[in-house]
Image 1 (tube, rainbow, N blue to C red):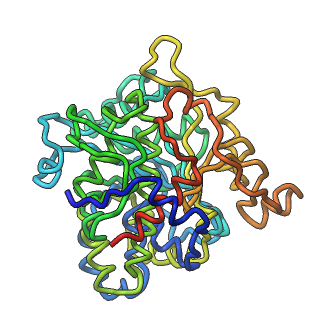
Image 2 (tube, rainbow, N blue to C red; image 1 turned 180 degrees about the vertical axis):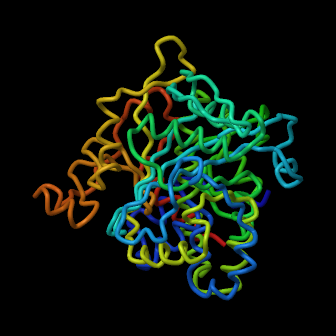
Length: 431
């Protein structure tokens, strides 16, 4: 592993007064590349490689089973996209990355990305895999149905796909998210380990500031001390998935979610710094490397649909990309599982359903890497901002607060959130 390790004191001495560098208005071209892995290839010059890239996408025919017709265009509509990270070991690429003999396929991580109607806001909510939810009856490929169950969230994927059919697995997770949230999911994307690692490698790796020591001999094999470290695809995958051996962590999924969100932000900024979006050759390699590991639902599996959606998101500002983790509490009967308080979570779902501002009191991580609690609503669309005076203005982000899901799970680190943001930026600038 190639590493550039410097102490926090050294970094902070250099950048105490640094400010976040400005980013071009085309930010979302990279954001979508990272979050959905398939969208950005439709941008600059991608029509020249239409047939080659299109042939690499695995289409999931969800519309027929859901009784829905894929729309010709999402223009003028808000979109909710379910993003699933699969832990499938199938295929040589995945087997080389994950050295164990686990069979089957599970949902390793899940997010819902809400793209606002006016394309000015993108909010991404992470659903903890250990969250106890009601999984509805799910239809298998042979037409038989599973029974409704109250289990942890990531079981939905396994329940739907117990016969090995990925479409059924996705649909069961899809229906579970709709039941949990009360909102409509429009599209889905599934990416496996190999696809994630390939995207990192296409970027030439990423630089990550490690705030706390990691000594994980149980799963990932990571041995890291605090400081700036360069990851290739396999190492970045291990870091994004690590749950054990992290100093100050209890091994739960919640801190892992924070690392995953941080890694996606780093990928986004690295793509911008390397001009991935202005060089057709680099863009082709970057996106093409991960496409064969994707399974995309009907409505966004065509290059023309992706092109229209991608171009409509050109003006997104980094502060208007926000990552959220559902506020959760330890389950009463199992401290290794978590549950939600619906009164706290409902306003988040309502914001997605109604395409309006995120509610006050919600902790977010934005595209600049800033972690803060929303104190005043920010408009999600022109129609939303006109509905309430409070939606037309926002306050400065406040320092990160202790939300329910972070109680007892925060890794010990002497740096403040602002310090860590600055340290990460300095690390990203290292050659």
